[in-house]
Length: 80
Image (cartoon, rainbow, N blue to C red):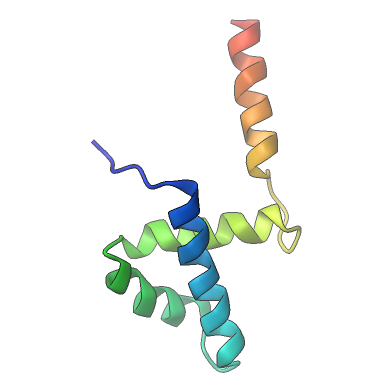
């Protein structure tokens, strides 16, 4: 069963990635995620997805925001 992380933990981890990218302009997203994920004891892919979702939520990338995704889930349940 997958481990659940609190939203606060996810937000803190994403902030660490964002801060790392801001501190070193030559640092790539992949490098920052690979450095930070093991320190937090989480999977690299999880942190990468959290960071990607934060970019979508802030409008820096196209895609469904968390709120839109939750609304779609709610409407599907309502229709079922």
